[in-house]
Length: 94
Image (cartoon, rainbow, N blue to C red; front, side, top):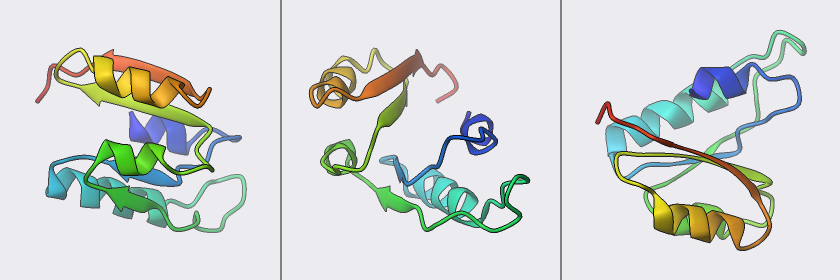
């Protein structure tokens, strides 16, 4: 899913969150080192948060993608409170 967002021309991944350290750090490295074909220069730094609440506390987040193995109900509520857009899917692969 991350690769799909990285390749969108009007999208920039500025933060990732995952309780799994390995997954979180991998997503952070992938986002930070990604070089969009449209610009040819690497993306800006991507922050990584173990707690979702820390990510959504940021004021510069316009949209949130939530992929959880459960319903993600609390994540959706927290993400939309400030008026952000969000996409949510139930991730069965975990």
